[in-house]
Structures are given as structure tokens and as C-alpha cells.
Image (tube, rainbow, N blue to C red; front, top):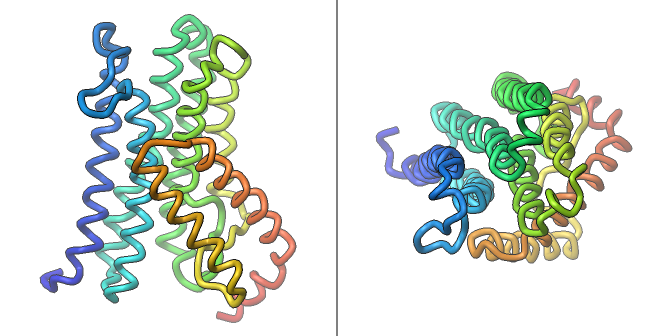
Length: 264
């Protein structure tokens, strides 16, 4: 850790960790009547909206963390453990609390009447995120180079954050009250997918040039939209397409993946 090259990826990890913590603080602030509906100075977003976008920033920073570690050949056991701790906060605890605080802020009466569902969904999601990260460090980081085993916590956290952003943007709580139930159910679904035996292809260089260009263009646009806090529909759509098509591909190649893993 005394070598300067290790400081760069760990700087991104540390920033990811701190942004996740501050996002949680903003969520709690949303329940203060005189502050919850006001925009946060300089951002033009309410505390809950900004907290959701900050989780999205953590997704982008997490990818930069891994990219810089590979670029500088600065991967380390310390970095892997530090990254997991930051991920647990930014993509495990923060998204679950975001749904919890959002429902209490947006529909307090509904939240009071559905407290068991909210507590259960929060518990399932956070526990599954912790198990997913522990499994990755202990097992999956060895041998699986092209595939994720289960839904990555980064993907899950971003999906939940964008779901809340869109739910708020289109005022679905008033237009479709049943949509309130969907948010806790999404926590449970994404939590179970994190510890599932399904396989999802990683974003990496492919032999097909068109696929590489498509990936690069979408990643570039994703960073612009994420840090610019615009077009959450695009980001949500990209995650949906990647998840559905990726898991479908993993299911069709499951036997081949497990055979290669067993050989390694």
C-alpha cells in the first residue's frame, strides 16, 4: 500500500464509501418536515432525489475503481476487501434505506400499514447483498473471469436507486397506489437475484467490434447522464436490457460455464 499506484483505485473506493454514507444522511433529512421538500443547495433536487442520484454516482465510481486498478496493475487483497466494505454501504444498506425512507416520506399512512413488508424487504435485500459480496470474495473471484455469479450488488443498487428516481419523477404514488408495493418487492427480487445461481456476462472487450463500440458508447452516455442527473429513463432501460438479455445468455451457456469453472 505504500506504492502510489495503489492510491488511485482506493481513492475511488473511499469516495464511493463516503458518498454512500452521505446519501444515507440525506435520506434521514428527508423526514424532517421543513427540509424534506426543499431542494439541496446547488443541486436542485430534494434530499431523497439527490440521495438516489448519489447511489447512481457510486455505481459509476465503482466501475472507475475497477478500471483504474486494472489499468495501473494495482489490484490487491486490501483493495478487494475495502471495495466490498464500500459496496455493502453504497449498494447494500443505502438502496434498502432509500426505499424505506422514500415510502415513509411519500406515503406515510401506507408505510405505517405495511411496516412488516418494509422491514422484511429491507432485511432480505441487505442480507443478500452481504452474502453476495462475501461469496464473491471467497469463491467467485477465483475462476470466473467473464461472468458474474448472481446479480452484482452494483447493478442491484443502481436498479433500486433509478426505480425510486422514476417513481418520484412520474408521481406514481398518487397515480398508481399499487406501485408503492412494487418497491419493497423489487428489493426482495434483486436481493434474491444477488445470491442466485444465475450467470450474467461482464462488460469487457469482445471479439465482435460492433459489440465493443455499442458498449463503449452506452457506457459514455451512461456516465454523462449519471453525473449530470438527467434521463434516468435511459439508465434504467440500459440496466433492464443488460439484465434480461445477460441472464438469458447465462442460462443458455450455463453448462459450458460450469464445465470451464470446474476445470480451472
